[in-house]
Image 1 (cartoon, protein in one colour):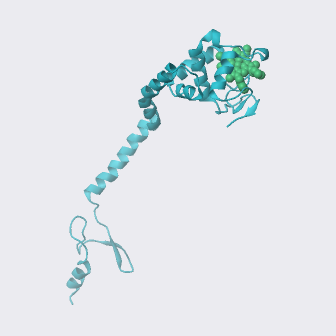
Image 2 (cartoon, protein in one colour):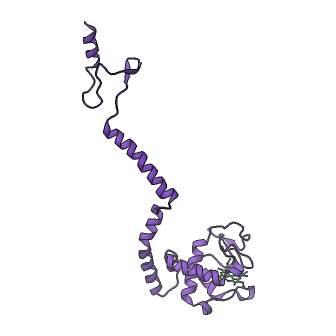
Image 3 (tube, helix red, strand yellow):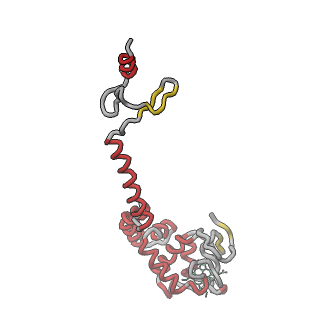
Length: 204
Ligand code: HEC
């Protein structure tokens, strides 16, 4: 057997086509009869490889550096009209229930109204972040008068006059107290830093 035919039979099992070896290719490693060739990578592979790198750089700058909208924010933006419609329906139903107030707390506009009313009327005693001062911390899970949504609504509406918590229902109106309650539901259990120590009974 000539050395030529030995070489061709050695490579006979390798498929032809892009990247197929010819006897002229260089073997860069050979271990246990397994040979690694230094072939040129196929174009389709190089395109996906460099394409992924270029995409990754663009992705990084768009989302990490330039504040591109993430999937959670996009979902919330798309759902906002749905949540607003649900909140309007819940309000129209007329009864203030935990489910109704929870529905309001999903509507970003109502929560924003509540935050504004909170900033105007409540921060003197409950602090700007709700962490408490003269009044209790509204961001922990402990409540003196109960942490259920409808109970919070009633406490804000009626106040706790003998303990220095004013009644807000008559002054602000039911809609605004509902909006404040919706806002309070979004800061409940967030335990802001530097908040006043818990008072009352822990609730989940
Ligand atoms: C003049 C001070 C003051 C202002 C202003 C005030 N609060 Fe209070 N608030 C208190 C005090 C004091 C308590 C605790 C009452 C008690 O010990 O029973 C309290 C209690 C509460 C509670 C019950 C907390 C619990 O643990 O059960 C809620 C809810 C609340 N306030 C919400 C509000 C909201 C909303 C506003 C604004 C619309 C507001 N407060 C404005 C002083 C105030």
